Image 1 (cartoon, one colour):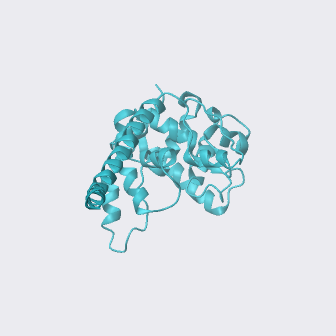
Image 2 (cartoon, rainbow, N blue to C red; image 1 turned 45 degrees about the horizontal axis):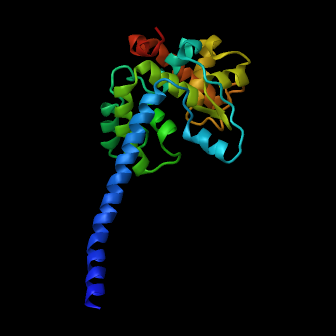
Length: 236
């Protein structure tokens, strides 16, 4: 009896150590998997977690991966102007914008996600809003910016961005809404696509509402002053 009691006591004492060891091993496994994925995703077509979720639930996905050279510079610059005007100058996280949001006396009334953070969310994280997910976006974005060139970040973003129910990527969006490849998008068409990104399920670039027309107009006005700040994402 004494021996059995001693063994149970030893097991109780060792349980926290086993739990900690399991957590450590899980964290290490996830870190190694992330490093491998970052290296692999620099070169191969990348799915988004939304796409994976639709495939797993047998829902249709419309996406045709195209290299950055087959996407109009009009769309590249429009998306930068609309979503992340300092894309070419920050290292994945726009600390200026993030600090401005955090210091807003009225509370966060706008987002501070860069295109790199949005890419991290789309490729590695889950949809929906939460402080945990937002906290994970920052280190992921910094890692992505370290491993991938700016052209790869924008290439992945434009191939996984959601532009409608089950519709992902610039090529599929250009074909559905304008009946042409993404390489031939005009400045006005690119501005509509960029303006639809904040609410892609309710905004139709082919039949723009008054709100989308206003958003597209703002995008076009921002593209001009963007200047060289959009050139880092253009294919060489």
